[in-house]
Image (tube, rainbow, N blue to C red; front, top):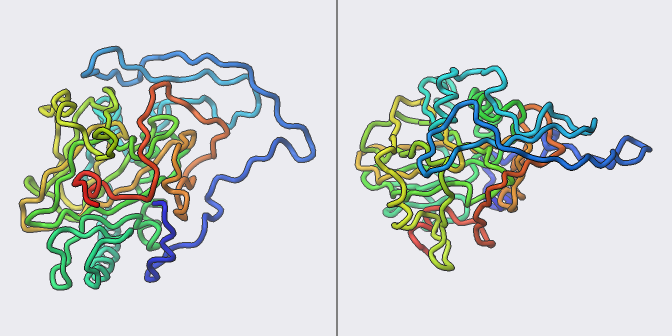
Amino acid sequence: PGIDPRQLIGRGGPRGGGGAGKNPPRGPGPAGGPPPPKPPPRECAPTPSAFPRRNLFGGAPRVWRCPRPNTADVDRAEAGYLASDYPAHVLSDAQRAHYHDHGWCSVAGIVDDVWLKRLRTVTDEFVEQSRALTESNVLFDLDVGHSADEPRLRRLSSPTDLHDTFWEFASQSAIVDVAVDLLGPDVKFHHSKLNFKAGHGGEEVKWHQDIQFWPHTNYDLLTIGVFLEDVEPGMGEVGFVSGSHDGPLFDLYDGDVWVGALADADVARVDLGLATYPTGPAGTITVHNCRTVHGSAPNRSSRSRPLLLQTYAAADTFAYTDLVKLSPHGEELIRGEPARWARHDPRPCLVPPTGPYRPIFVSQQRER
C-alpha cells in the first residue's frame, strides 16, 4: 500500500487503474438542479448490540446507530445498521454471533481446493522471484537467512495489486460473502498481504491491534486470513484475545517511536488466557475485527505457514490516511452501493506516523 507496484514488478500484473468498481463521483445534485437540501441535525444514541458482549474492561458495550436523516439523499435504509439485520450468505447465526461477541471467528472449508491450487501456484511464482533478492524492498520483506537456495519471506505486500488471481479471489470468492455476512451488504476492499511464517523460525508478530495502522471513521473493518496450507499447533498460529475488541485501543508508540505493538504494561492489562489460536486444514479462514488484540509466536515447525490476508470495510467507513491511495483497488466497492454519508464512531483512534509504508515486522523489530 502507498506505492505504485507497476514501477517495481512486471510479471503477473498489476491490474489497471481503479476501474468501474470505484465509488462513482457524486455531483452537487441532479443534473441542472440545485444541490440536495442540508439534512437536519441528528442525535446519535447508543443502543444494545444484537449480540450482547461481555466487556472485559468494564462498562456496558454499545453499538452506535444513528436514526435515518429526514431527507431523500440517503441511499441506505439506516446508518450504522448491524450486519445481523440481513440474511447470511455462508456463515451460520452462531458463527456471526461468535464474531460479534468475541471479536473473531474461525471457519473450516470456506475456500475450496480449486482456489487453493490457484493461490498456491501464484504464491510459488513470487517465492521464485524472491530468489534474486539479497535485501527487502517495498514488495518483498525477507526473513533472516533468506538466500537464492533457500528463500525465506516474512511478507509479500499488496498481492492483490500484483496478480489478477489474488484480486479475483479477494473480490469474487466466497470470502466476500463472509465479509458481507459480518459487515452488511455494502462492502469495500481495503488492502491485502501475504505473511509466510517460514519454518524453523518464522518471526513472531507481537500483540497489537490493526486499526491504529490505518485509522478510519468507525470500526467496521475486518481482516480475513486464509490458510494456504494445513496449520497445526506450534506453527506460529495467530492468537486472538476474545472480547478485546470491546476494550481500549492501545498506544503503539514507544515515546515518539512507532513500534506497532503493545507495551509490556498494556499486555499485562489484557487477559491473554482468553487468547485462542485456531488451527485447521488448508482452506480454513480466520476473521478478526480491527480492534481485536492478536499476535503470533515464531514457527517452531519445519513447514512454512503462509497466511493470505484481506481487509474489508463497510462502505460508510472512510480512511483518515492515504495508505492505499496508489493501490489500484484500495477503497474499491466490491458489493452493494457506495455510501453518501460517512459514519463516525465517537471513540477516538490513534494515528500512525506519516511517511513511507513499513511492514509491521520492521516496526516491531525496530529495524532501520
